[in-house]
Length: 135
Length: 135
Length: 135
Image (tube, rainbow over all chains, first blue to last red; front, side):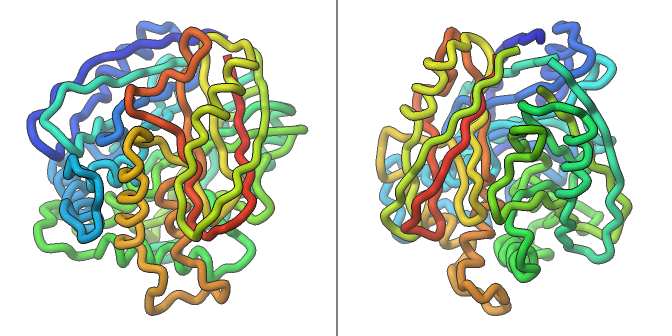
């Protein structure tokens, strides 16, 4: 088995933002030379996450962030964490800090409408994404 | 390492539905001949997902779908996506579009009460599930 | 490829609790001798889960559990499951029953503030965690 580990940076502009990172991950897959296997996309931060969702219509990421904000309000009676970003930690655990995508014929085997997003919940910040390709 | 990739179809009947796909995945594991490793179960859709939960009592999937509906209402002030299924996209990112299960002795190493579910959030539709076995 | 499967027990003390299991997983990684690869951390229960979040300030797990309780109330009109723990099943599907972490230089490649947590949503109970190391 071949294992390739790479990382790249993401710079976010607002408190909550979904950044499409599909092309960066696809490039790492292509450069790895792996034709059949999988990619792990991992976020080493506790107030951010990785998700896969529609990247054709920009209103979809907007609405996902809105739905998460409704489910987890920024200020909730009982929050103890003094940094004031408890909602961002909760959203990170809800969305999750990693995703995995299958690789077929040397390419990410995403659905027609699927893209890979870095989810910022406590920006703006400079962030990292780890990618591991195996095959 | 051996890598086996298969796919199968799921036909959903209602807008929100959890379909037990454990036996289909188990069959792919058995046919792969892999005795120790893992299975990735991947949904290539942006308004559906994959989860692992109790498949003994049918009221559990019912209640999970109800809890998700409460957390993410179908209609929320501020949703912009014109297709009107923003809640389904959000639920997809909350539940996640893939799961992984360990394989031991040629079989899925699920807990006693665990089954694998395809989660439909914008049906009825014809859907696909990708499975990759590695070991 | 080398595959190592291990398991360990977690004893929870309250209904909802996040237990830091980073050191147990790190030990399994070290003993495996794998220097580059990944670890799958898997919970074989349907009212618990695995997440990765901050383990420096204890108020963070407290606030994540509070946010989940707000998003999924313990008692919701319409819940049918007679065991009365439907919220725990829903939280399990929201947080997810597994995580994956990359291994670099023989160690878990976690972010500075990241720890691995077993999430109890229907305790107190005796629970199991499966770990698979690959590299």
